Length: 309
Image (cartoon, rainbow, N blue to C red; front, side):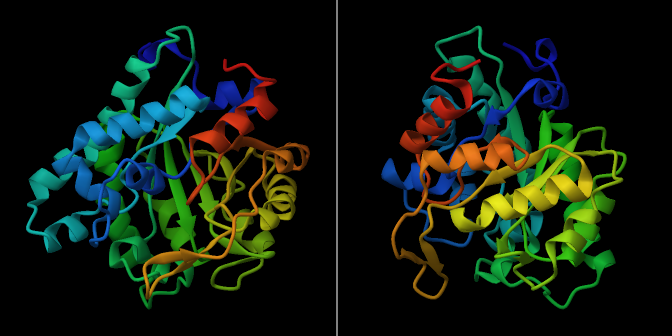
């Protein structure tokens, strides 16, 4: 099914909740791929693109309605550090969208309506040092906008259904991203990484979500890459402050140790939590780090009553 024969994501959200995929990196690692360098999953766009399509397909077949591309850590600056030219980097950014689109064509049930979200990770993701969980990089809003705009343009040109402005740690970067998406002709969602009722940088979520309330390009707001326990309250705040559909896709509940580049703790993510998230306003529901296809199937059963549409 091609992108021009499906309703827009905003139209679909008006009809009911949709299921997002889970963590790209853990799905690739479970398939035996090494993601230990600074490009993380973006390295496979150049080296093993078929593996990226296979990961997307696993989530679509698990019940996801929306797949998020492997471009979270894909930036012109990050690629340049690994000797990849700007022209080639633009090709790889576009390829990330096409690989997800190819996965939609491989889904067995051709009647399903499926969407592709182009991942736009925060500035800190390019640094690959865990700073996306702190924010406030010492850059101005204008400098952050200049960093994000070229990548957004490259991704938008590839024709995704939506841009996923995700794992945003502070309001300064959110403001930059909201400026950068204007005029691209592609809708977007804005998703913060949070701790409790604040952004990772410590700003109140009411203030953070309010930035997106009147931005026409933003079709959903919410949280991702956070503890499952933080989702319900954040979702309710996002819905109340913006009046927009809410997107939520938390981590498993384990914690990332940036120094050791490893996850610690135990999973607290359960499909039973989904009902509470929906009641709080969530309309795009999935998982982030360490949430795999099995969990997405459980979410799809909770959201769609055991069927995918």
